[in-house]
Image (cartoon, rainbow over all chains, first blue to last red):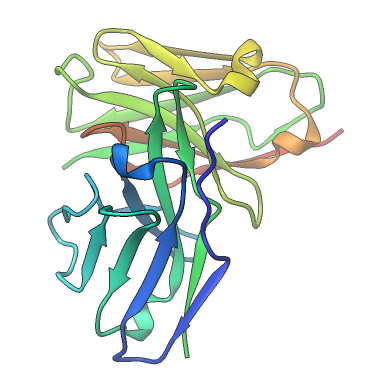
Length: 108
Length: 119
């Protein structure tokens, strides 16, 4: 079955830029979605269709899927951005939604 | 305002059947392109997609759990129901329902319902 690989954690100082990767076989051919999940809360979509932002999501959040891996970039990181981030695709081969293992963004 | 809310038992015994209900508002599941999915998360673990039902009543299941899952909808009651048979302690998790919006992504999520499987 299709596997999405994310780093367990990414650390960044406040004000710096964080990049979270999401690797998968031929991921460029798929649409990638990203979710932010803070402790004790439900996930929130932050990126859809590789690079589009839902309304209400700051412009500091951006996505790219021009190569392998796909990436989520958080610019000018704030303490409130500390959370788990998950990437997700639809795998037509197995006919199922696939989530990555999640990456914890640590704001130093 | 679009909302979804999960309801069901907090504790089930091994081998029992779990029935969870997602009650939603602010959209119609008859609208072309929309759907409602169930996703779970074991404590300290990643998100795991379980099933989705679409506006046309089509559905998809996680292949590894397909034999244990059933998803259905009640348009009039604006509810989606998930049943999972033969529950096991490894099924202990928070179960979320979420609206399938663009592509196969989920733009609005419920608050989640914690289910513990224990004798």
